[in-house]
Length: 325
Ligand SMILES: [Zn+2]
Ligand SMILES: [Zn+2]
Image (cartoon, rainbow, N blue to C red):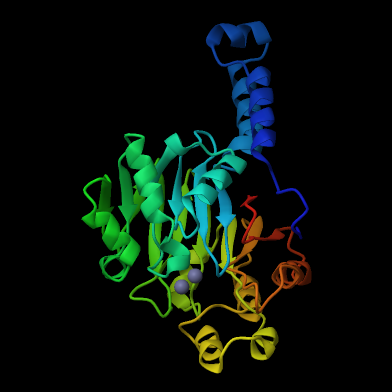
């Protein structure tokens, strides 16, 4: 289990160090091969086991740039190339750029942005981000469901602004998106928005699931999240803290409803069913600052892993600090 002041599972520097160590260990050219004294089959076995260990095992990375009721943004990266796409930008452009830099992600490797739904904690940074990219001479590929686009002031303002170069593309639960050879499969979530989505991402035999802003996880959503190595799972509130908390009754009802947000108990039940030999990391997302603590969701998910003697690790995403897996 990881709390706020602990290091992420594998930092980018560690990946780089391992990658360099690999390069020096495994000769690449045929002349290098003969100089090494190893036969091609030895080399291929060595290369396979080493690269399997350090690269092929971790083709995808999830960077939770910010997560919580005040703003959400995540990046999914192909670790071998540094190319990435972003899910939502509900934080200021300044914070977004700072979080990218904290995660050693370079803006020039941004391949596209997908939007889960129109709530401003997922969209409010988009206009300034798109303007910033346009100023740098970069077009932006923005994937958003038509209903979400029509209900988002921020996204409508992008389409209406001639000074912003943005290519807005529609998607729905039947679409398959692709960035930097990653395949992205959207699935519908159950939320009080015009439309809302979670994603399964696949690349090079690796898989990642990402879901926030849903009141329930139905069979289809669970199917999309099955057998992934990294699982980003909403764990928004603790039911009793929500009950005792400061929100008006109707808001409490909305959060706890089937079209609200997943509680710690719901996340824990889901993880129980989603445990697989492939799963390495689960990260609790969209944690409420008023109706939860950072300790509770991580502990609850950790307990599921321990109870099942599963070697995976539980993490949590933070509102004001990025986490890389
Ligand atoms: Zn929402
Ligand atoms: Zn939200």
